[in-house]
Image (cartoon, rainbow, N blue to C red; front, side):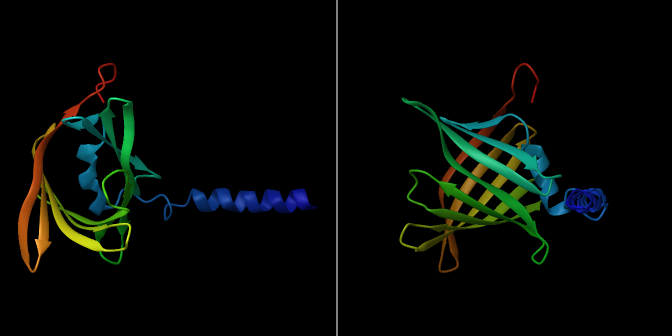
Length: 171
């Protein structure tokens, strides 16, 4: 009897999971991330990697750093589509940056990915930034970090990321 009930539940689950309502396309808000997937985006001794997960419904990202002790992950997290805000919301953790949690609200405008970022330190104090990634061609983007305070923005960091593709697959 239990086997038949379990079999019935599994059958219903299979039908529900195959439903077009649950097999949604990548939300338009996340499509801008497509250009980042594949390869390693390098700036000096760091490498950023991006990939879509769960039918394109979120984007995972991690940053690796090359140190004397070898390669180590220094940040990772994911962006998700927020249907109420129509933006990508991201949550990231980091190691050795003095930040416990990064919160992103990200949108794409032309060739630029713009994120409003709140960086929370270990005491729960926030710092607010704006981050722009301006794509100059398929394999390069200009990264700029602006500190926002009292309505003004000051650029505090910047650099050019270049994509390195894996030689055997071109990804």
